[in-house]
Amino acid sequence: FNTERFGQHILKNPLVAQAIVDKANLRPTDRVLEVGPGTGNLTMRILEKAKSVTAVEMDPRMAAELTKRVQGKPEQRKLDIIIGDFVKATLPYFDVCISNTPYQISSPLIFRLLSHRPIPRIAILMFQREFALRLVARPGTNLWSRLSANVQLYAKVDHIMKVGKNNFRPAPQVESSVIRLVPIDPPPPVKFEEFDGLNRILFSRRNKTVHGNFMAKGVIDMLEKNWRTWCAATGKMIEDDVDMKAKIEKILEETGNTEQRPAKMDVDDLLKLLSAFHDAGIHFA
Ligand code: SAM
Image 1 (tube, rainbow, N blue to C red):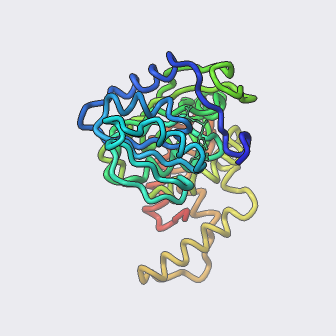
Image 2 (cartoon, rainbow, N blue to C red):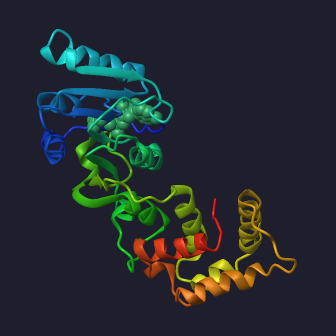
């Protein structure tokens, strides 16, 4: 195991560790998921407040250290350690997720949390600053991106704390930030793959017009293929002279999106556009 590869930067500042746990407003009934507990600086504080903790840790040596830390204490019975890769682990029920995340798995962590059922109440997560700022970015700002839109479709995200590199041992190369993620419950009835498929097209050049992005190489062919599959599946007749480009342009025109720029479109604009495509039988995934 190698510090850089597994992002083993231990949070050494007790004030920051306590602040992270406090931000979750834990209830005595809460079951908490922690990803990458390391030596347990957050874990011990979570155990004080919550009903139980499941901690997923990939490094057996770290897991052993954490086990040692609770051994013989009342907390021992409240802690369940899963040794393995979070990305592959089967997750238990949990109300809250708290994690000083190994930054390599930032994206998978976010999207696993958002697709977990039942929906967790809240997550307090430490990320690399740049990633955190993209998560919370608003439409019309520099960092508004496919990631921002995909996450904000399902959750309210706020930046709550900056954490400098010197709070960690060893100090990482990058600055960090803590964010709060509150999933929207019930979630909007949109298939993630569809919304993401649209965003993939739009945000490949976010300052270009929507029309320009749809005219990019391969996009029309891909959408026509999806449309034909949909027609076959729903028994819809396909006319002889299909003009997919015209179909797409009509939708963009009718929804007022031709000259829009993705950099300025909010989640609602994106959802409306997606829904207009779906009405025409055009799918993105
Ligand atoms: N939570 C501790 C703290 O705040 O001091 C440690 C944080 S350290 C940045 C990240 C931890 O995640 C390390 O203990 C590392 O071994 C573990 N880790 C790395 N990749 C992982 C993965 N894919 N699944 C589970 N744990 C992982």
